Length: 107
Picture 1 (cartoon, rainbow, N blue to C red):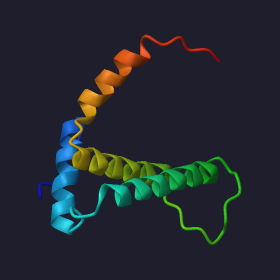
Picture 2 (picture 1 turned 30 degrees about the vertical axis):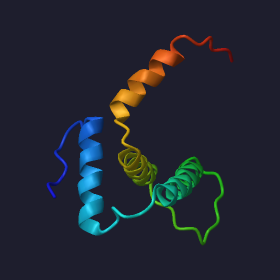
Picture 3 (picture 1 turned 45 degrees about the horizontal axis):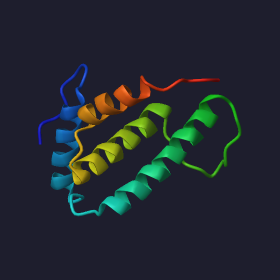
């Protein structure tokens, strides 16, 4: 597996890297449902890291990484789910934004 290049990464590069990383580390057989549950758990860890970074109390026994570390975990699981579902994240983002652009947003 090639290490990630320094500098900006395109979504397709991230998806390709995650696919290779999962294969190398023996995670490629994990079902999509398991990956989705792990994504939800990691999303909770992002919230906990935000609480910690903003001075809000968290369980002192809780082990929480930095916001960046937890967001990276979310991105990895997101790419893993997309790979299993055959979704190109860049294409999905473009398509979804076309829909969003037609919506009327209120606050």
